[in-house]
Length: 374
Length: 222
Image (cartoon, rainbow over all chains, first blue to last red; front, side, top):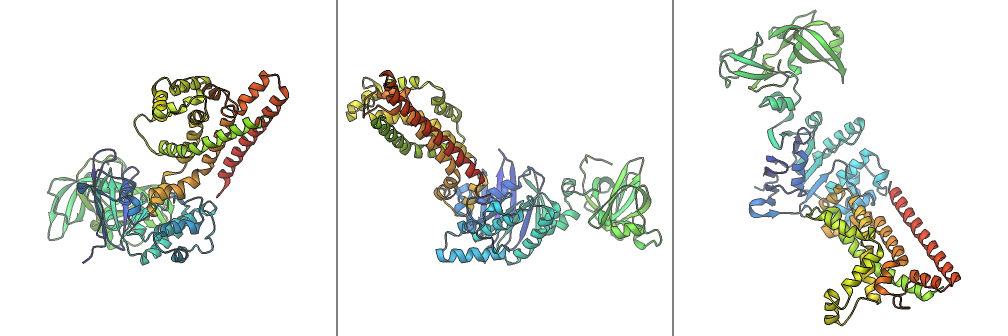
């Protein structure tokens, strides 16, 4: 069976530290996510052959692009790579059509024009063939860059923060276009981004990078809900991150009990953590339920607590609340509720409310010191 | 008007350009893109003709070219040729004193091309030589042309080095700048003023052309 995936293994200590093992299947969109300086773009450049890490082994669709052990290093022009640069890097002295044709020089001349027109149609840029890049909007430039990358008939498509240079309205439009375009692309696709929302929206899988090392890979939803460590949880922007002590495990009820600052909590059964051991735990805002004042429900029984709203923000149809559950210990929990629910319950600053932490949503991780210890 | 001297000056300038164009592109590009040990030392040496009095540079070239010793002696023994007081020597001296005027603007022109654009070209499948022809040279062209124009004008008006290395031999090494000096010495004020005015006019044209070119390149494709 032929292997149409890309396999990447990079290690080096010097200059930019890297310790990376990755693979991406054909048709899969993998997002490299991490804070600035975590090595995302360096990995992308190494795949394209624009950067040569000390120890590297890159095999794409069974073609060896780099094998440091055997001193193999294919220069960029010999790798079939489609790379969309952060600022698009269009050739300013060439028209849109000429820009795309530059990546088509390995096919006969008469086919080049047809191919370029076809690609322009694919990215919805018909009619702009003769324009120069300087006369295009940011969104149009990005589409030209995507078309040029695809013109290369790449074995891997690399996208380096391709949405960072456009406004939000255009960005949403380009997201939709990429999602529909990728259905027709039979190649591995790797997206570099520092935007978690973007990676959740677009990627099948994310690889979370920190200081040149991959901390965890998995579907965006899974990594958010089940981070392996508190560092991952923090990088995934999880707000409700705390430490606690394991009290006991009950196989029958499938529950693990914790003591958190004098409060007993019930979590789902996670017996891999020994009794009495200290752990980190987190809960996603979506797993914190708001008690309805008029009609208490069953879920209210799970880890109920009372608190006061000390921060209230509305955005995108959601109300994000910061709830102080213990003023003395300064324990705050972030919760999200749909805006209409917030309105119906007349939530607002300084209101007292009841909340429940769903035990299924409490996720335990090995203990580590937290900077914002509560 | 000393047409012979003018013709010689123009010939010297053109021949100098033929050599300087590839040298400038090669060195300018190399200095723009590569980091290496001793780069700043090399850049300092290349910039020397900008600040050295032309007579000082001319004196050293005269010493080096002298058929009595070193390089000059070797040239005389091996090829039976000499580089002082003839046109070939003048060309070589002219290339050397124009090096910074050719290399520096070209280096700036190459350095101003964003790295990503060159990398994008490589990712499109272009070999380094294709990247040079199709991307770098067209984008650096205004800088290259203005460097060439400046070198042309500079050579046309150069006096000190030409006099030191070439002397003042009509039809062989007497350029227009030297001819003006000659005419003044001979109290031929009319000829001197005609030639001086011609050079002044030409210099102004040159400078306006380079300004126009750099403004145009700033506006194009935007």
